[in-house]
Length: 65
Image: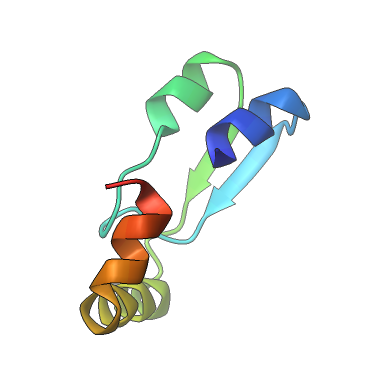
């Protein structure tokens, strides 16, 4: 959904806080001409890690598993 919306609305640049916990469609977006910056921000990594651990059902629903 997010990658599709980025392409649909022709968003030229995306900043990703982290992709350690979940690797999205970064390669697809880059091949489609979107400029990506991945920060690998430690605070963001920790927030995502804690959220996934605390609410696995919600996380799995959000990512479609």
